[in-house]
Image (tube, rainbow, N blue to C red; front, side, top):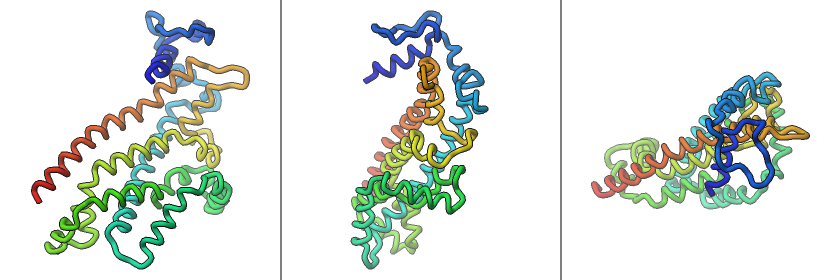
Length: 267
């Protein structure tokens, strides 16, 4: 599993003139390592710079879109999951089944209607189609949050109601602090999905200054050849945010379980 990643690191530290795809592949980095690949690929030496944009600019664009997508997903899915798990209203179960049914519809089926809707809203060639839909929730996210909320004891909410807490107050002060592990899981999945999303930016973005990392990686593949050292260099850089987010959320996940246990013991 680590071998391909290790080969990527070795290739990113190899001078372009010394790289070869002939077997056996080079598995040891040259000495001294050729670190100049990094400033060249990320800055003005990158292939994307020929179009007037650097890979670092695409890196910034992806980061903004991914953060907004995570915030929107956590906000909308936590509220939706809480409503389906705890509130009583007509056709609740039927609406939940209908929501789950949307998961079996392939995204290719809704691609053209969604594209026409985006054009009608005037959002074409903007970042809005990439993060605004996350504020309306997703079927999987709502399902995940609902299943977690069903495991919380109802006595927690009953005690809060006796103390005079409102419905939203119970959600904000009782339910949400206990949802750290599942929110962290959903946040990581959303971040990875947004960061690696290639199809939506290709459909909705036409301005090269608004391109994202997955599109930037394609600049290193030409019609006749591939800039392998540059491609491996930017690929290494592109996975750093995912590793960083996962490392941060992993510690939060353990702390969230511990806090949840302490609350349970206190009650």
